[in-house]
Length: 284
Image (cartoon, rainbow, N blue to C red; front, side, top):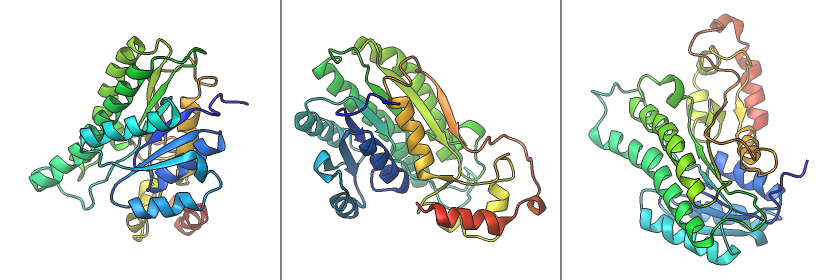
């Protein structure tokens, strides 16, 4: 199926991470022009992009998602390079390492989680909406698309990471509001949330490498496997398509193997070695 994304410009934050790189590849495969935003690992992102066959369609930009002015400048630079922005993916985020009850967590940890995961997404959306306001809707009637990368922590909660769960849950309220705001700028524009569960990336590998971790995290999933970054990216591409998802907005799509808020398996039911090997082969 032609997803109608060829030639369209997509802005992706957190593009240096595992899901970010997969997003870049997936959108590039559809023929998109790419504005890839990075911060802490910017040089690594530039080197990665330079090696790709689609490097000539990509613009790498520095932007800390905690800084709304930096995001606005990045969106403006991308719109000038490509003529407009059609797609935005608010992907940048950071899980809070170490299990701490909220009363144990330092104030700085709580603030940082909210700043990066919730406000960073809000500033990204703000910059995208401003770019859309300047360009107006496409003449062909194919609406713009904004997708937030949430988390199953925002759906089920996550003990020991309440600040992260609260930030990711906040994206749902943001999405439900912006789906009604964005149509004032583009009558066919859409806003959705994708909620990954445990996904094999460099950020979570240290956790998954702990003995018993895979059995524990798959205990609430009927599909006893971990997601790959490309699994998440392909779902975002689908939701961004003005062809495949032209009438889909205000939705939460969970990419987590059917995860529920209850235990489906015991550790004895899970062949951890087999799942770990699948994760190793999947890569980031």
